[in-house]
Amino acid sequence: MTPSRTAFAAILGKDLRAELRTLQSIPAMALFAVSSFVIFRFGLNRTSLSGSLAAGVLWATLLFAAVLGINRLFVAEREEGGFDAIRLAPIDRSVLFTAKASALVIYLMLLELIAVPIFALFFIRSAASLPPLIIVLVLADIGLASAGTLISSMAVNSRARDLLVPLVLLPLVIPLMIAATAATEPLMLLGGVSYHRFGTWLMVLGLYDLIFALLGYAVFDFLLED
Amino acid sequence: MYGKGLRPLSIATVVMFAITLSLVFFYAPIEADQGFLQKIFYLHVPLAIVSLCGFVVGGIFAILHLRRDDPRWDAYSYVAIHISVIFAVGGLITGSIWAKGSWGHWWVWNEPTLVSFLIVFLLYATYYPFRYAIEDRQRQARYASVFAITAGAFVPLNFLAVRESASLVHPRVFATAEGGLPASMLFTFLCAIATMALLWTTLVKFELSAKSAQGQLKRLRRALDAPSGPPSSRIAPEVH
Amino acid sequence: MLALLLAAAPAIPNDVGGKYVAGAYIVFVLLLLIYVAIMGMKLARIERDLTEIAAIAEERKEGALPAAGQAAPGRGSEEPSISDSLAPQGSRGGGA
Image (tube, rainbow over all chains, first blue to last red; front, side, top):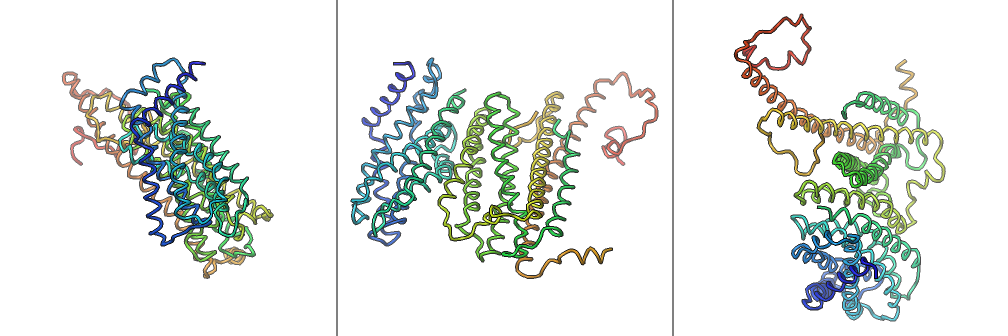
């Protein structure tokens, strides 16, 4: 294994083990999501959702829950010298970006594993049409993780740490949300599933993922300079 | 010396302005659909286009800043984004006025270019609190450059996404342009874009020149061991 | 001549369209003027700081040559430029 791959595995493993042990982010994100669903039920005064309303509630909630996890992503690195360790190691520093983004993707997928079935339970009449949602979730997670890791790594070194991520990240992921909701909406229509422009939206998601993953990888080195 | 080309540049801007305004009101024909209201097109669209190009230019300057590690490029990037944000405000307000005149509402969601533009503006509006939150000057400059590059890459993506989601019910304003703008309108439009681009460049140079003067003042103070003046802005990069 | 120009130019219709067009162009002009005003304030500040520094520099210069006196070898009569006359004459001119 090349040094970069070893480092990647090491950082990713450390993050996952730490999360498993302390269970900080994922339960909080999941609980937040479920509470949000309840709030939406009462806020919208609806007991079932379909179509664009369902897609909107699901994705807005997932996004805000994700921000909770993104806020915490680099806190340990900053407090315990993880940034310094990476600077000293003789490897490509962008490996920190890929490792952290991958960890975040895994957190998001775990979040969705809990939140989406509960969403379906609360609001969706027939969940038979939902399996294609998985690919939308995966693609959106990658994009969200790339942008989130990038912003989080900068926010952690600033004063208004918790404020900066929601502030800057939300406009940045609007195209992602547009694509995700537009792809999800036809899957949740009451009348029947349609794959109207599903492919187009998957391509937009893929494009977003590609651009932000490459961008994050390319500029991360400059972020770590001291 | 940032003020060097400023005189010919501003003269050119004024001349182009005079030419364009004359063309808009005395030469360009009245459009069949929207009537006289369509004349806002020559103001709103160039403002928006130049603003977006300005954001991309700000991103390019940011790339140069990171690659050359020269703080001057951070200042150029900041000023480019700053002026483009001002143009964006102008674009949004004129777009809103146009919407009110065309469809009776001050804001419409199914004009995709206007919506995309709002999102881009929202993102760049966070540039200022973002810079403000990072205390160390050098780090602030570096992070701001990363932001500018990310946001620059975001612009085309955003337009793509919003455009795809646009309802095809409302005839888009540029449908007429793609369908075939009459030559006189096209010519006027191109002059308007040239004018706005010149104005943008003039204002950027103007702003850089003012910053440079402030920088030279600081330098003078230090040379004379004079007491330093009141602290300048915490986010605007200094130009030396 | 003016009559010809007015005849060729479409008058601004006082209907709905005209008002909005005028409004939009007025907004643009106002934005530009606000920018000019802000830059004007910056310029005023620069001017203030420069006078302060010029005064300090002159004091230093006079302080550094107390013995050499105020001897000003003939410089030939140069036309004073406007900025020279605008600048306060400091300790030399006395209030005027």
